[in-house]
Every structure is written in C-alpha cells, then in structure tokens.
Image 1 (cartoon, rainbow, N blue to C red):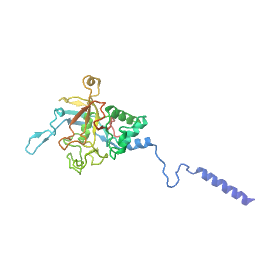
Image 2 (cartoon, one colour):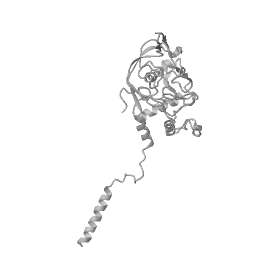
Image 3 (cartoon, helix red, strand yellow):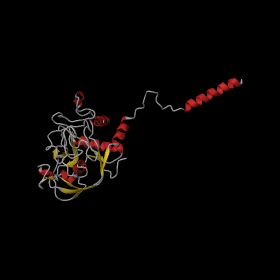
Image 4 (cartoon, one colour):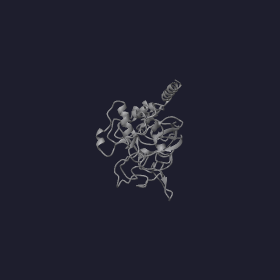
Length: 293
C-alpha cells in the first residue's frame, strides 16, 4: 500500500513540475518570429543620427585656393546668398528608406507597391533606396513612421538636410567621410557602376549619415523659395504664405548622374510634388530635441 502511494505521489509531483514549465519556449532548432511591424520599429529606432542644433552659414560657402582667391563650389545662382541659419537639435535617419521598408508601408495601408515590375530586375529591390516616389508618398511615409515610433517625424527642411549633410555646417563639397570624392573608396566609380547601390555601400559622413552624396536625390519638406541674406531660425517653407506663390517641392542630393562637379551637395532641385518619374527618394527627420531612445 505504501509503495502504491509513493508511486502516486511521484506521478503528481511530475505533473505539477510539467505544468510549471515554460510552454512558450520553442522546440530545439526553431526560433520565435518577431512581429514584422515590431521588427521594423525596433530596427528603425536604432538608425537615427542625433544632430545637435547650432548656427551655420547656409548656401554655397565655397573655398579659398592656395593663392587666396575665393571660389564657389557651384556656379548655381540659387545657392546664394549665403545666410545664417540657426536650427534646433533634431535626428535624421542614417540611411535612405529602402524598397523593403517602403513596400511594407504600402502593403500595410492596402496600396500596391511602387514600380512592381522592378521585382524582375536584379536592381531596385530590397536594400536599394526606394525611388520614383511623389512628394506626397514620401511625406505620408514619414508621418506614418512617426506614428509607429511615437516621435514627430516628417521630411527634412532644406536647412535640416544641408546642415546634416555638411556635418553641422562644415565647408565641404560632398557628404562623404572626408568631404571629397575618391572613386571606388568612398563613392562608386561611375565608369564601372552606372546605377544606384544598396544603402550604406560607402562610408558615411563624419556624423554617421550614409548616401547624402550619391544614390537617390531626396525630397525635402520645403516649397521652392529663393535664398535671402537675412538670418533665420528653424526656417520651413511649407506654410500657407509660401503656397500662394510656389507649388514645386525641393529635393536635395545629387542622385547618380554627373561627376564630382555636378554632384555638389549645395545643388538644389525642384519638382512638381506629383512627379514620380525623377528617381527621388526619402530620408526622414524626427523633430525632437533629444536623442531618439
């Protein structure tokens, strides 16, 4: 009788221990998949570069040669006059938005992915920068991203874009690791590679931001506007007053066309916001004065 009770007791203890075990642990050789939206949020939260605010001279500041003569980096009239701009601290994405991430966004809102025919090409998929987007698509993506991560996210103003590209206002011609271009070292060799590259293919600028020179041009928040000499604080040209006389939206960055002289980071471009054929992509900013956590 005692032996039977002992066996019963052992069976009860065994069942109790079994019921207390962690049933959420996956079997050996398997892994628990993270929710795709949560994975996107966690990954993108880790890819912001904090840009400490300050005052810089916006526009083509140029350089002084060995003989003491001053030259502009470009001959573009709309990059002048140089003027003082003061910006509040913000964060900017280290990478351009990829097709993978933009496809996820479009699918999540019930829309067809852009340029679906690209799926049959060895380029323009996955980790290539999303391009051929209207200004409205680009901005809607940034606003959507902000809702997902809980920060005020938008397209950068031109001033925010240039300040970050110039590593807080340095007088450099290109947004590379050293401000210059060396083909095959810190920038693609256009004699060999004549198309965009996956994001982060070349070294970042000193702030840690990739592809602000090269790859795709990027939409900004601003409507077209001329530069003026007066000092500005956190300028934004997306207001009703500017809309009265301007309709084109500004893009910055050089894309992949042209040599060193054509891809200066100071160059400005404008497009109809409905234009989706110019290969312009997205890089968002978070208008939050502290580092993104």
